[in-house]
Image (cartoon, rainbow, N blue to C red; front, side):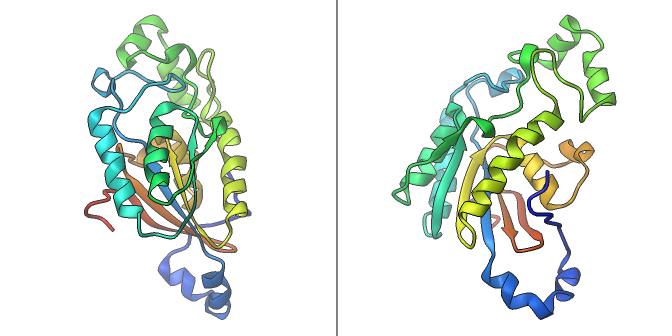
Length: 229
């Protein structure tokens, strides 16, 4: 994923850009990147992917907390996937700003194909060896009837780039999924996609990324709306 060759730099590195600091500060686009709330079948341990499951009561409360935390921010737009768990969260956030969430199927979670609706134990039983194969070929291994991490990246990246370009210099909310969020964060921090699962994304968490002309600064990862910012 590459959003105009953005790269993550530390606070020390930012000082090296002091000659252009005003330019960077004046063109900052802030992305509030949210994972949807807890889903109704969370306790089963199944992979949902493109399966359309709703939020649980707790999941709704989590997204209400996110919406309350962002209500005083100057939000230009709210984006979400077209899956119910993402859309409902997007609606709760957008309502506080008199906005309608913009839905996109390209922001869906990874397509788990034949694995969708199964636990890891069931996958191992029905499709022996496939979990190990995915571990060995993490980026390009395509789940049977589904997609690979690389293909997910190719699907998500252009949409996010378009969102950032459309709302340059503004604040935008994206209510998405664990896999989608990890790709966006990994890109902002210039991490290899093999580190995909090293980034935690709890239900209802908030991430903040500030995009400048030539760099991205991650301000918050996996934050709780009530305590972390």
